[in-house]
Amino acid sequence: MDSLIPNSDHRALIFLSLTLLLLIGVYLGIGALLRHFGKNPRYLLPSQTVKKVAWPLVFILFSLLIRLPALRTLIGLEDYATAFRKGSSLIFIFGFTWLIIKLLNIVKRLLLVRFDKDESDNLKARKVYTQFTILERIAIFLVVLLGIGAALMSFESIREIGVSLFASAGVAGIIVGFSAQKLIATVIAGVQIALTQPIRLDDVVIVEGEWGRIEEITLTYVIVRIWDKRCLVLPTTYFIENPFQNWTRSTTDLLGTVFLYTDYNVPFNAMREALQRIVKESEEWNGEVANIQVTDSRAGYVEIRATVSADDSGKAWSLRVLVREKLIEFLQQNYPESISHSRILLTQTEAGFKTKRNRV
Image (cartoon, rainbow, N blue to C red; front, side):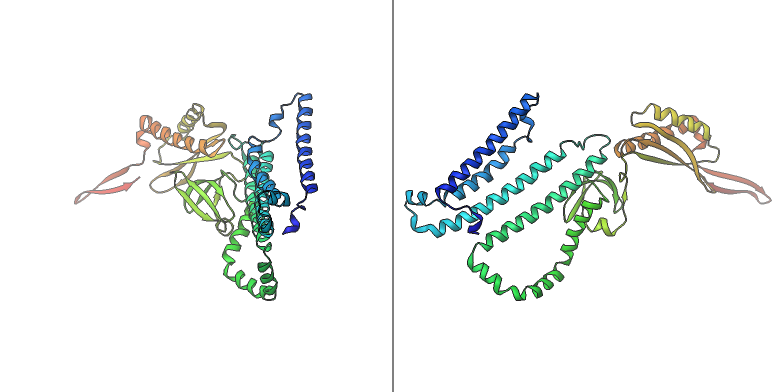
C-alpha cells in the first residue's frame, strides 16, 4: 500500500501544499464570481460541509507528515521508519475512506436540495429520496469493504496468505455462497427496491393486516411505522415475494370509502344531499369525489358505500372518520327508523299469536 502514498520527500510536501492552495484559490474564485452575479457564495455548498470533511483531511495530511524523514529525525525516531510507513499507510486509508463517505453524503444533499418530502404532493421527492438513500448505503458498503481490503493488503504476511489460498478460493466462495444465500438475496432485494421502487419512503401501505407508512428502507430490512406508533420490521425480500397494498404508489390522491348498513326504507337522495353538505364543510375534501352508492342488498339490510376524495392518506383517513360520524348522526336525528334494527312480526293462528323475529 506504500504505492498509494506520494513520496515522502520535500518535493512531495511542496506539491501537496500547492495543490491545497490551488483548491482554496479555485473555491475563492468561484465565490468571487458568484458575488459578481449577485449570488451568495455561502450556499455554494451545503451547510457544515467544511466541518464534515475537516477531520478526514486532517488524518490524510497527518499520514503524509509522519512519512517525512525530517520529522522522524526531529523527534529522534528515525530507527522506526518501517513502523511509521505502515502506520502512515493505515491512517491514509482510513482518512481517505472516511473522506469518500463524507463526500457521498454531500453529493446526496446537493442532489436532493430541490426536493421537499414535506410537501402535500411529494411523490417525486419520495421517489428520489428512496433511490439515493439506498444507493448511498450500497456505495458506503463497497467503499468500507474496499478500505478494509486495502488496509489488510498493506501487510506482507496477509498478502502472502491471500496468494497461497487463491487456489482454494473458488471452493470457499461456493461454501460461503450457500451459507449466506439468505443474506445475499436480502441485499439483492434491497437493490431491486431501489431501482424498481415498489415502495418509497413515506408510502402508505397495508402489510400483515396493518396500516402504516414506510419510515426507513435499508439494504436488508424495511421499517413500517404503524398508525398506533408501533414499528413493523420486515426483510426487504418481503416486498418482492409477498403481495401488499401501496396506497400512494402512483399518486398521493386517495379515495376514502365508508360503509353503512341500513334498513330498506333509508332515503338515498337525502343521504346524498347530507354527504355533500358534510364534505363542503370539511377542510380535508379536495372537491373531486363525493357520492353514495348502494353496493349490496341482503335479506336483512342494505349496504351503502360513501366515497370521498382527499389529497393524501392522512386527510383521507380524517375525512372518512368525519363522514362516517356525520352520516350516522344524520340518520339518528332525521331517519331513526332507517337504522338497522330487529322486527317482530305477529301472526294470528288458531292457538293464539305466533311471533317471528327478523333481524334487520
